[in-house]
Length: 415
Image (cartoon, rainbow, N blue to C red; front, side):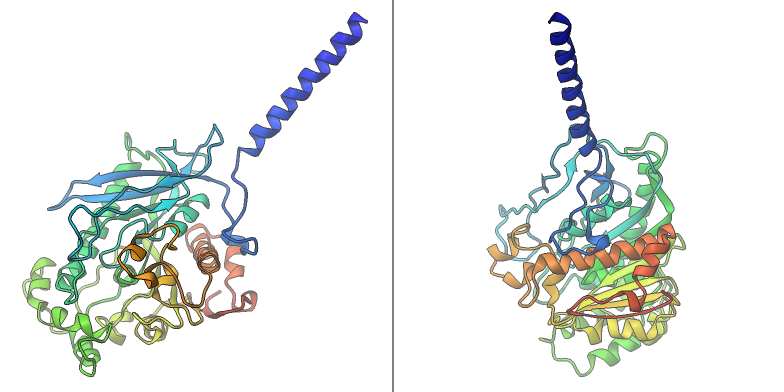
């Protein structure tokens, strides 16, 4: 009897240990789910937990806050949940004490997971007067698939005259250079993300003015003659026409800020860093480039837009980009009938647009935001896995014959 009791006690102990191990094992990797149950393959959460930290770039004439997402360890099996820092609005006229916060899915200050380091770098550029967290659904998602993502908080203020658009057009590519140099420090010996970042494999993406920024990063060049032609028929209240006057009247100031002796009469120099291997612009304006300026882009590109975008319509963004870039590997994705806000965080994650009466800034009149974001995550992830990691399955998933999602228009070459 004593022997039998000992046997059952021993068996019970083994059972408890096995159950405990199964729980720990289940926590080793995140559950592969998307925002919706019908999320496509590359919209499912990747193999890595998502860590998050903020840093400050002190090099230069003004500091830059840097948001960083990266593959992380999660030994305690914590739920990925975070409230990104409360910040003031960059909209002119807002109360000085106004602050807003964006919620997301990451682990603050989590220990980096160096199991597959170094990871390719994706730099995300936010929209004009927006913030680094306004596409957290994407930046978090890419980290879960084995990318380090950096996004700086560009210091610019929106007002109806776009008075800072000309200076931002120079500061943006300069800030990008500062971000790459900072990434080298982060991943260097003694850095906070030591060994984590492959600064020879970089992609740049962004939405709206961030899309414009990523086009610059890819090799697009300023052409003010093209801008004059594009602006001539536009009224000041036109979404694109609003930026014409401040850009056209500040060419000399822009040249000085860029370190040029005079404003070039033709194409301006390229801002492209050869370590940037691909770009992902969404809703990126092209009027300052024209056909000749866009031809400077020769690297792989995934361009995206809302088919019903009322701010940066396809004919001002993806259509000329598709027609004029010299890239041999390119894809164009349109979310049919979607407006500009479909690429931003949804209102439940970022309530700021609602609070200032701009519902369109965090919603879409046609699309379910989770479905739109699942598709964006799917295409961007597959594209970056292909061009930065050489993933053959991801490459095949971008072939036109492999894409059959309802509600989108898709073209691709080189896949």
